[in-house]
Image (cartoon, rainbow, N blue to C red; front, side, top):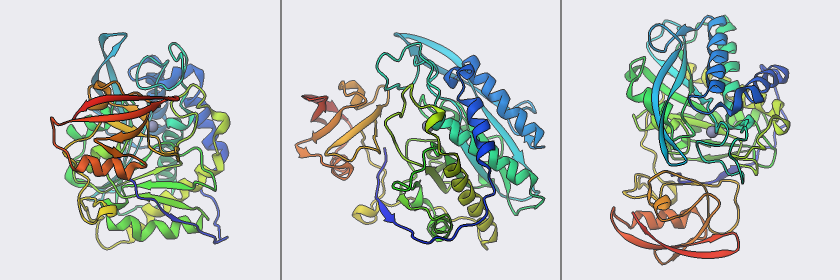
Length: 407
Ligand SMILES: [Zn+2]
């Protein structure tokens, strides 16, 4: 669950600098990863295995060291999920490549490469989604491409940076951050050697109006110190979310007390639908974001100390932390600007799902309080304990529904 505080800075500087990243190269990777041959990269599927091979082959060509298990690039893990009520077990695999600069500390650069496959796993929002390929061009062929581009840049720049870089492509994200959780529970490099983690999830739809959304802002003072200038140089507006806990893999690292930052170009109507295709990707926009991330990594190297970890406070209400005792287990829809809390997805076996709340529903009242925004929702959460029962009112289409929710 995210706590969002939208600080919007409109940057009007017209300065720009030469792009390090080429739209054509970005397009080539997204074209491959979001092609129908990859079958939507469902966790454990043949399409996902082929995508993993593509990533590992590029890591190998760049001379990265394998950082999976058994001297290979892959870190496999078991995943259980149910299809039409039956529990299945498949193997997901993280892909890990290490750029060894002989440094003590390593920066993890991550992106999930799995998506919803053919709609049998994860949370498709397309009606009649079964057996339809969900290409996930923005979610997250775009971030995976960012990972490949950054690996290429740092492997070929002939500079020995003051940090090593671990490039991690996660599987199982759509099923609940499973790949990143497996990695942080079974790290292939010591967790204590990780300086910070940079995540890219959905960076393919940059628009001037939305700009970039930067999460994890409150997990280290270094982000606020370095990112504003870099965004300005790219003439990009940005919005920040202070929490280290969110709907992507940076969360797994934050929960191990590692500073995290995530880049995101915002929600859209094709999110988790079969229509998330390459046609709407902004390749030049992604190149700008990668230039910002490169600048961030170069500037971290110039700092005299490593990024300091801070338990992200909740700036909306002072210094209270965002560790609530209860949540509904829902993911908010960031592109929704109307009244209420619109739900993008519900976690399995959590209070919202148990009460029958679904993706697409808009929560308007919770525990007697009118919910006009995510802030109202967080306020309610802060007042409740596990096991307590409250009433929730929500809109499904034009219908108002009432359910009882047990935290
Ligand atoms: Zn994603």
